[in-house]
Structures are given as structure tokens and as C-alpha cells.
Length: 276
Length: 324
Image 1 (cartoon, one colour):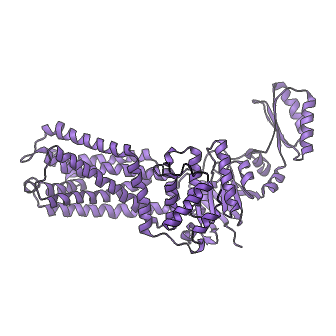
Image 2 (cartoon, chains in turn brown, cyan):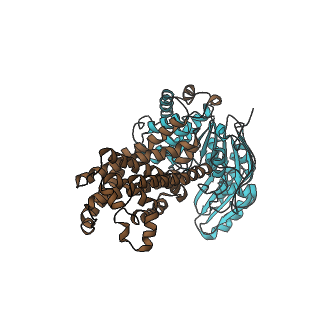
Image 3 (cartoon, chains in turn cyan, green):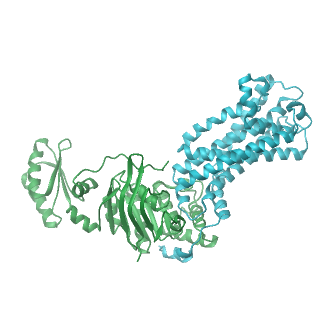
């Protein structure tokens, strides 16, 4: 049996040991979250199957009853479904964050000589990477069932990029939620607040079809701007007729919302993490 | 030589609950210090403070000479923490878990690999090293968690109730691992609810209750104060309880504890072998039918009874697992 003394030989003397760099620690912690996704196929399969099922239900069941002037419902639905999908993926972040806290994993990381920003940044990055994957998958399913881009391919990629940017901002909201929830189940429960954001928006049906008091909320909440920003890029020439403003109008407003969400949730997450 | 841990008047209140209430504690270098106390005594709160996870409301805390409040980053460079949970990533192998923590400790990739390999061997996890941690047994996970706390070769190892919830065999394996560490010169602070654990592992024991230190010393010193072993007699017939209680009053030292419901009578006896043999012979001589006789170390309740004159505080946990 080797004694621990042999371990000591390899490590720098405690006195000269420095804090590990931000990039290295962030990547190391992020790698762990990604490995967890990759090595827990149930997580990925369940998330994608669920997403695809919901998508197909909207496409084929509700889609027949919803008529949008001048375009097929699938072209209207897909940008909304994908943009609001970031909220459903984010619920997993809240649960994972709460679980890490509950099981002492965060305690371990907080007791290590690494920058405090590393742990949260790693979580946001890894989960955004997962989001990119599931968004790409949903898009592939969408194309398979009749969705098409009416704008350029560049616009299509920009739309994809926007979704990921929105998702990154929301990750921080879910990180905060997970930290305040205390346990994974409570975090899941708190995640329910995404429902009004998802459904009282322009994602599935035009806002003009809602009663007046709902329209007030639907027209001004961030998700509607985000959905319409994505739509304005995928619908090409149909976009202006449907939405009434050029792309830049929606994209600017969606990005302002994104920054606002980050400006509130990121410092809140860091403060909560510091306090422990 | 600076003490590894020097705490003076540490205080932490959660609303009306005093998790720590002016704790004074010194852990010298080169030894294992055990913090012994019932649930809710403030053990976890104290460890979390030493690990810089929690800030004291008042008092000072020096860890390896660094002020935990002023320079927590310096403290984090010298400690390794194994909390009450096995905080390992189930979707990574044992080796990957250790290499990750070693990397975060600032070791180069090569050094991290070497250190992880050495720790795996040290903890008897070589065969399981490349299996995902989610396939590990509870005891193996705890050992891996211990490994994660020492893969960075910290000067001070913090173990919060390391064997709680383990089966007896895993418990002994973990004890062996901790003992081997100490021989290689790591300072250890461990908390425990078990007197025998503190006795086995520690050269210094601090007993705390209600957030204060109530006694401190080597296991031998404390045992002397507590006064030897306890003889516990399990009487077959309820009517004989009084007879045995009367006999034990004469033989023992201190107050006889009588539990009518379970027909158990116990008392501290003279720690010498002679004293204990005499007690057993006298019991035999009464001819009373007994179910069982046991000579054992006093349990934590009895230690408290002796040291503080009262029972341990109720088992409600006043230390939140995580400060909100």
C-alpha cells in the first residue's frame, strides 16, 4: 500500500499553491456536467422524446384547427416551439443545481481554491451546450414534418443563434431558482412558472386571438419578442405581413430583454453562491 | 508552531437558534482532533466555517494561521473537505472524479493523474477505479469522497461525520484509511457522534454541546474524567431489578441508571480489571437470573451525564444542512 506521502511528492508545496485559473476550473467543472448528460442516456432520450412528442401533437392535432392567414401552421409553430423550448430545457438546470447543492457537490467545489465564478459559469455553459443540441434535434424533426425556411440559410442560422443566446440568459434564472429551491423537487415545482411565459405568448397562437387582458401580458412579455424575433428570421417575406415590423424591431427588443434578464439573474446567482 | 485551527468565541445564530455560541477550540498540528457531540451541537456548523463555507457572526477563526474571514482563499489552499454526503459525480469513474478534483486543486494534468492513482491505491479502490461511481456501494462512495478530499494533498483534512450511515465493515475500512493518512502527516479534524470513533482515531477530543466546548483532552484524560467502563445488566424478571440496582449502587461509581421498561440497570465501574471482575463475580453470586451482562465504554449520553450533569440535548438538528 502506497502511503499518501507519495501523493505529496507530486503536489506543489501548500504554501506556494495558487488559485486555479478561471478558464481551467470552468472547463473542468463544465466537463463534468456534460459527461453526466452523455453518460446518462435516459436524460437525453427522455428530454428529446418528450420534446418531439409535444411538437408532433401541436403540429398534427392542434395544427389542423389553428389557421394563420397566409402561411401553413407548421411554419408559424416551429419558431415559437423552439424559442419557448429553452424554458423547458432550463427547468432541468434548476433541478440539477438544486441537486448539486443538496448532495454536497457545491460544498466541495466551494471549499476548493478555484474562482467562485467558475462553478456557475460552468453550469450555464454546459447546460447551454445541451440546449444547443436539443434545439438542433427539434429543428431536424421540424424540417422532417414540413417546416421550411422562407428566408436565407444565414437568417436561419441567426435564428438558431438567437435561441441559444436567449437560452443562455434564462439558464441564469434557473440557476438562481435551483439555489433558492433547496432540493430538486422544489426546483421542478418552481419551474412551473415557465408555463404562463410559454403559453401566454405568440408561440402557439396569434396574440390577437386572446382576450384583451391576456393580450396585455402576451404582447409585453419577453417570450413574445423572442419568438417573433426568431420568426422574423425564418419566415422571410411572410414575416412583415404577419408581424408588422421588420426583423430588427423584434431582434433589438428581444436582445434588450435578454440583457435585462442577465443583468438581474447573474448578479443574483453570484451573490447567492457567495453567501452559501 | 501555529495550531492548525484556533477558534475563539465563534458564534453563529440562525434566528433564535444558536448553532455556535462562543466556541473555543484549538487543534494542534500533527494530530487528529475529534469534535464529539450529539446532533445539533454545532459540529457541522463549525466544520463549514473552517471550510470557509460559512461565516461566523462573531469570534475569530484561524486555519493554518490564516484568518478564515479575511483570507478565505488562503484557507481553501490548505484544506480538503469531505462532508456528510458522498459528493462524487456518479456519472464519472472513480479515477475521473479524483483527477477532476486534483485539477481543480491546481495540479497539472500529469500530477493530477499520479495523485489520483496514489489515492486510489491508498483507499483500496484500484480495481473499481475505472468503473462509474454510480455502480459503487455506499462504503466505496464514501471512500472515494474521502479520496477527493485528499487528492490535493491538503495540510488539513476536514471530515464531517465520515462514517455516519455506513455498515460496520465499511466503517472500519474507512477508519483504517484515515489512520493511514494521519501516519503520513496530514492533520485531521473530524466530527462524530460516536465516542468509540473519536477514541479510535483521535489524539485530542473536544466535546461540544449547544454550540460550546464542554470538555477537551486526550481520550485517556476524558475517560479518566468519565471514569472507566459501564456495566450494563439486563435482568430477566422485572421483580429482580431492584435487587440488582441495589447491588450495583454498592459496586459502581456514580448514579445507577435504571430502565424498568427494558429491565436494564447500568452503572460506571472501576476501570481496573480487578474492579470489573469483582463486579461480575458479585452479580453471579446473587443467583438472580440475567439475560445479559455487558461491560462497555460509556456512550455519549453517559459521557454527557458525567461531564455536564444532564442528558444530551434533544436530537433535533439545529444545524441547517445548508445555510439559507
